[in-house]
Amino acid sequence: MDKLNILHVITGLGIGGAEAALENLVTYTDEARQRAKVVSLLARNDDIQRLRAAGIDVRTLGMRRGVPSFRGLIRLARIIRKEQPDIIQSWMYHADLSTLLALILSGRWKKTHLFWGVRCSDMDFSRYGPLLRLVVRLCAWLSWMPTGVIANSEAGLAWHRQIGYRPKMFTVVDNGFDFHKFAPDGAGRLKVREELGVGEDDFLIGMVARVDPMKDYPMLVSALRRLDGVRCLVIGKNTESLPDAPGLIKLGERSDIPSVLNALDVFVLTSAFGEGFSNSIAEAMATGLPVVATDVGDARRMIADCGAVIPPGDVTALVEAVRRFKRMRSKRKQLGAKSRKRIVSEFNVERMAEGFDTIYREVVRVGV
Image (cartoon, rainbow, N blue to C red; front, side, top):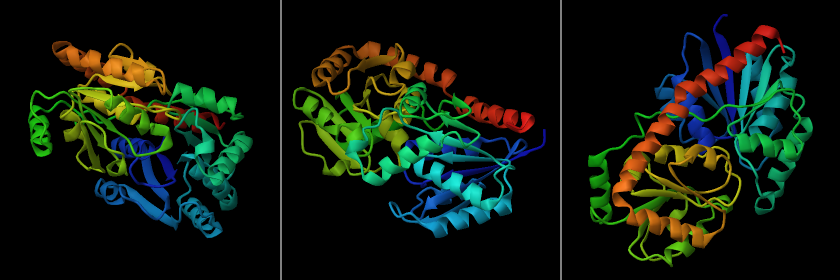
């Protein structure tokens, strides 16, 4: 089969799990099999230069978050008409809905296959604005129209069926990762600890996530108030604004996440809802860390026996798990090595790229 012409459309190219998965996919894609281009709906695009430096054609429509734009849809339709892609892969709800409308306007509805991408699971939409709720309801109602929907987690697939998604094809492709970037690094560990004033033998946990109702930082802060001899790094947008707690070190956004992860002894994720396939968990495991995470999304499937999975919102369970890992210093290293082995073998970027490519080629071959 000839090289496929793929157009990826994403809501924005800032910091986030979907954005990282897209970057991993398009920078790894075999150029002999696919010609990949990227369109971002939003004007703020932190990753554009990095993608362009990797040779990826990236464009932005200049839309503003929360502001529907018919002009943006027309621009996207013109790009589709000009590029004539075999496949359009959209990422996240706003891009899914916008791309469906733009594909219809482009006149290529019967010539281009559209796949939506869903990246979360049991969202609590009451914690977010009415526009998101409306967009998701529309997506569920219109989900029979694209060629298919690709989720990044089994939990996400099941939950979207519950809220009314009825696509012709619904499947899962796990996220894949660059394990050269995320890997154990003793020198990096010491450097970050020295920078932060953390002793070599101090027990240090950490969490990488933006401040968002989904991530449930109050659970982590409550646990820290019950823990002695534990220091904790929090990294992500607006983490510098979290309330103080014993041992809490608030770093805000950082660009050196692989090095910061290496400084930790244990990674934690306290999500209350909404996770699909957590990039943060996978990146921590690849760095050789045991993980304590709430049982949200596919966390249990990812971690398996390489850490601890606790109920969402259960502060006591989090405190007990952290204390248990604090006591088992030698076993932590063994468990961390096991974590890396599992994530590298099961969730690598090669497997993700092959998963997408196989789906695309099958629909093009049979003309679904």
